[in-house]
Length: 340
Image (tube, rainbow, N blue to C red; front, side, top):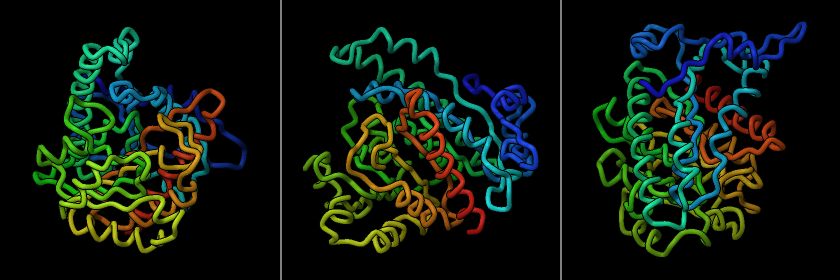
């Protein structure tokens, strides 16, 4: 746990904006007092949801993508802590744990060239190191019978989420991924585009459903791989939203039928939501309301083990809007899951 930095009272006080006659979310969340015995503290704490950040974009860099995902965690906290605490937001059932600190790894990629194969190899080795820390923390949270909510970072961290959950439960898990891309690419060294393929080949991921693949950005190889394997399934954004061959509601039901008979993770890639500043911002994608509806439906099951929000890459100008988006998605998950 040497990479874990706890969120503390000083952090909280610097971020929360109190107002007369209002009760803010951040005034009611829990924090841990010390780094020692994280598992024991979590197990004995009277909360269900453990929120933590992974402010890194090493995995995105290693996938030749646009960096900036390291900014999402801070953007999220600034908004989340200042929403209202009321009967709908469940603040007293939430621990803000802190974040995994990868500034050293972030500094190393600054000197690397994405067009240089040796440098790319170095970046992918760094991602493998990040994987180990994510895996360890997720496993501890799941073992303590809590529900992790992870704010990325790149989608490379799906691998650690899946592996950590699988190790804690001592069996493979299923995953539903709201994403424009499959992230099931070849195992060429770890990056944000192959977290699921690595988890699948290593036996941590059993069944996988990708919701809303973009047909222009999915290779024929991926489509053939999915169509020939009953553990892998998908639908496309175009089939649902453009050609109207499928309905959003029925496809959510079909996707959940694929995964929800056993423990499953919920992965949300912000690249799938229209005009969200992200590593691969799209002018054509699902609306924020559709993304929220998806989470609401996917979370109404005790088999839903975690939520991962990734790939948002806010700039100073868009920080507040991205923070609001991530906050809506987090609170939608908690509302639905708490009532499952």
